[in-house]
Figure 1 (spheres, rainbow over the protein chains, first blue to last red):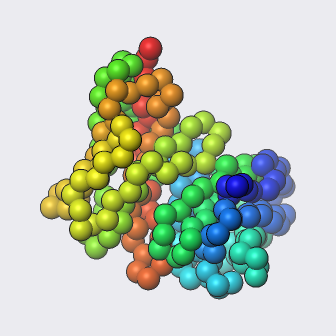
Figure 2: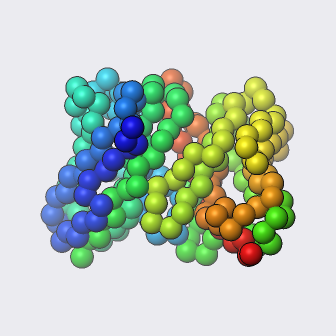
Figure 3: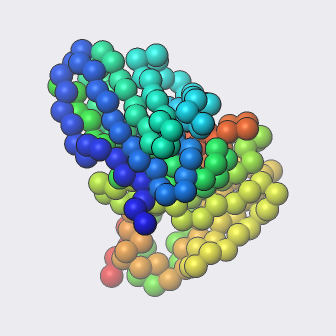
Length: 112
Length: 113
C-alpha cells in the first residue's frame, strides 16, 4: 500500500513564474492538507481540502491556491513566485478532516 | 509564529539513555496533539498522538505527557537508539471542525553510539 506520494520531488523555477505541485493521498484517505516548510523551520499550514473544497486556510496570500479531485488527489498552485517561496512543500492526507495526518516526502521548490 | 530559524535546540544523548523532548504549545483550546519525527530530506513521520482529555499515552518505547495547566507537552523515548536521531516536532490542532496543525519549535536529537 503506497503512502502519500508527491511529485515532482525537486523543482527549480524563476521569479514570477507559476508552479503546480501534485499529491496522491494514502489509500483510503479523503482529506489532503498542504504545508510549507522553510529550511530549519517547522511546517506551516497552507490549507486543507475535503470533499473537493477548501475547508481551512492558513496565513498565506491568494497566490497560493489548490484543488482536490474526485479521486481525492490534490494540487497546490503558486502564482507569481517569489524568492521567499523557496521551501519544502509537504502534503498530508488523513481518513477524515480531523484524523491523524500522514505526510509525504515533499517537493523541494527552489525559486531563483 | 512558531518558526525557530536555522539553529534548532539540540539534545545529545548516548545510545541506551532515555530522552525527553519538551514543547510548549500556544492555544489553550487545542484538543489534539501530535509528535512527529523528521529525518533529513524526508517528510514528518507520525510518532504518537494524544487528545486533550488525556494526560499520558504510551506507545512502543515512546510516551507523551500533556500538562494543560502550563500548556506543555513532552515526548519520552526509552532506550534511545542511533536511528532515533532526527528533528522532532510537536504539533497542536487549532482547527475547529477541521484539522489545522500548528507546529512547535523543533528539537534536534543526536544519539551517539
